[in-house]
Amino acid sequence: MPPIHPALSMQQSFALIAEAQSVQNLMRDATAAIRGLREPTIHNDAVFTLGSIGVEKLAKMMIGCAEIDTAGRWPSKATMIGWGHNIDGLIEKLFDTAQANQPEAVATDYAASLIARVSESSTLPLLFATLSRYGSSGRFHYLDVLATDSAGQFDPPAQYWQRLERATADELGGNPGVSPADFEQFLRRVSAAIADELEGFWFSMHRLGVQGCFGELGKKMGWAIWPHLRPDPLRR
Image 1 (cartoon, helix red, strand yellow):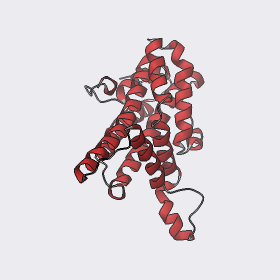
Image 2: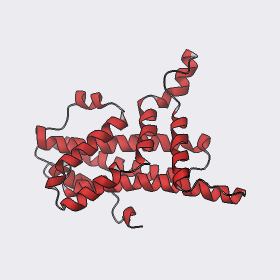
Image 3: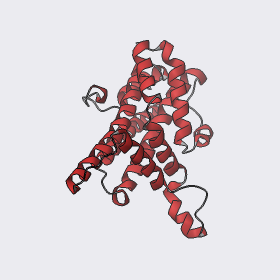
Image 4: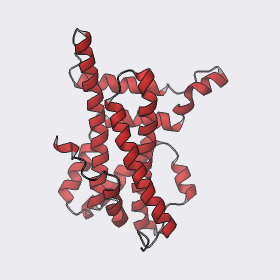
């Protein structure tokens, strides 16, 4: 079997395939964790960990695929270290890359509609800000407080999530009802709405990859990051 791309060795090809499977696994489990979120102090760690790593890997992988077309090689280790865990910055680069390549897509109008869907979402920026905060330094927020006896310059990731939940609740009408059962149902709707947005982003990146918005290698990896036979979430 030849390498998956002429610019990659066999070792790099196997690594990319393994990374695509990791993205698929993490994004699947992150959306499931959000749907099941009821008590933040119990469930947030799974959401933050799975979501931040999954989105970061997806972005770095698809940006890397696109850069092979322009630079002739996969981004260097120093370049990827420089990208860090700043998910906000990676998402901006990811969207810019898709936008720049949209005119060359297989179906340009369809690609444009996918880009518009993710870039115009009011939920995704708040979600990515939460994951970016966690990925950059929030994983150790309380250990840092413990070590320094200082609150530090950043809010804890949980506060970012609270902003996201409040904004989503407002979009859903902001009325949790009066009974415990009503409140539980409302929480389910809030969690489902956030999970739907993350799944929509994931699906959109899969389709934009297949469309060619992340280069020729991105067409193959677009298929690899989305589970076979998983329904299109944008058609629900």
